[in-house]
Length: 383
Image 1 (cartoon, rainbow, N blue to C red):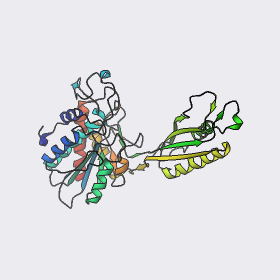
Image 2: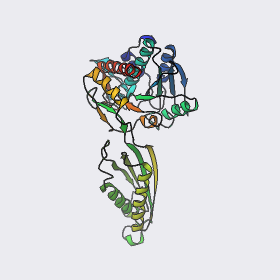
Image 3: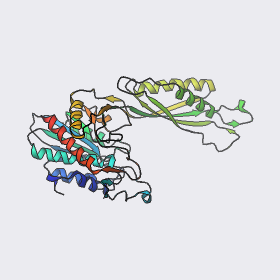
Image 4: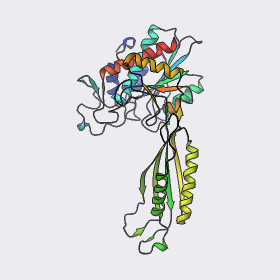
């Protein structure tokens, strides 16, 4: 494949054939490194703790702005390959679709912005600088991927003025939705320590399961909020309760509950942790036992206020798809949560209806339209 005349569909197929099940590199990062290097980009592998990461920059005039793209090439496991209509790493093109793990999330997005960035700098080399960051650690812990690239950028004086993340953002139709923010995400584990006893003599025990059941009920029934101007209401879901107790006639002395919270800009993870700590202490006192909690934060909520950058993206999307996209903060987390500390960030990509599913696939015309959209965004930004 000639790097100066990249076909986004063909590149998507090549990337799908790289078996980059997280955190394996599978040849995908190296393929992109080669393509960007051949196109005159300055490339650096920012690998950390076995995770492959790529920073690629086309150096335009120093006094011109810097546009950034971000994405990932790692994918979730395909599951049982026998359940796929076409092999999950074949990148097969059938009936106007390209099939395979990562087709939607998000090798098509990476292929589209790679092809767009290389084509743009070839035709407008003096417009400005273009930075592309690609990680192999978005679907896993996300601790050594985009975070590692941003750490390297800070250490070496690299910057982006804005960044577009190519995650799939549209629920069912191209052009439907742009993400201008994301809810925060955190997991909390509660551990109750009571006293084991015989179920015939409950007065001699301190029932950890009953305490956790009470706590789970109380925190589930109380809404965290009613939503904010830019976000829907925060949610709290009890995702597991476990005593490790196989006996029917034993009151458990230990019990664990797991909770996932998706929170909007009315909260911080620290405030929510303290709120739930107070609730746990209240229940623990009622049941005369101890409840501890451990918090794991995936990211805080953030918002890129509607305005110049998002307006520019909206106009480019409308010009290609004919649709005016909704500005949304819905969905899960993405690596935009890390980039937002570096520069304004928005997300726009393809339809994500089949991502992480058996028979993941994307329409060929959608990939070509996405590349064209990214080209128009670059043209408008550097205008």
